[in-house]
Length: 314
Image (cartoon, rainbow, N blue to C red; front, side):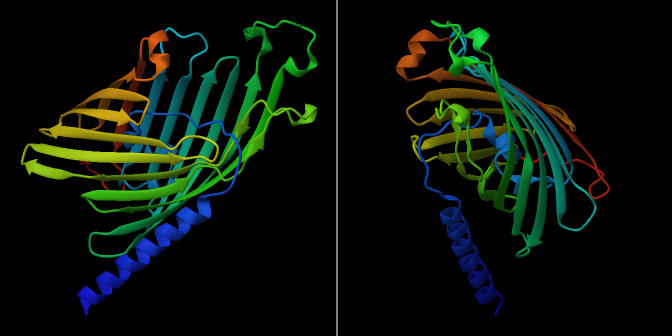
């Protein structure tokens, strides 16, 4: 009977994930993409609010990314997030801030995350999450080489828009799968002059990973992230990280038709980890930049639910 029930639960879960994926896929035109991270496996909450509190401890993460070094106006991203279970059974909360700059435009994003987790089986958990917040987008025409300084369309612009997103996250101690959209709402800038120079479109994310115990001192975790936006090519990131003696991580990543990456991390203490990634651009744009650098610093602190922190691979 238990075996039949387990099969039924997994079947329902698969149908649920497919249904949610179809629900998130909305038709749209051209798109401006969200911030991009090579070390996405450590920064899951930015794309999926259901991840909030899933590590069982207070998790604080800072990420800095400098993309396409040497190219004027290249993207530069700073991200901060914190999340934790709050002592109410199954509930997790989180906050996040992102500053994203590219060329003359910049965007500041402030979000809050809520998650609720249900125990599906002895080792299987299903989390549902909601994300809400605000985005402030601005354009500084002083950073442009303007042919006509009196051009009305190129005046200083500041726009704000709400953020509403949701996600599902299914996980055990060995593997995880998630599907989410960090923002359902679409925003069109420059609408007042009937010219759309930037559009923020709905993004759909599918993530997954599995941890293999190769021996008592070595773990291997392949992971993947797929990002879909109407009007833009499908973005696929594949990575493989090894964890040695619960201290040192090293790995490789590949972004389809875009970049290859080397990753490394070190668990400084039970509560602190630092990581670095370097991207080598495989497109024609790679001829004009010196690659991309990304660094993160993570703190994990015990809570009433888990006084001692046991660092997990995802």
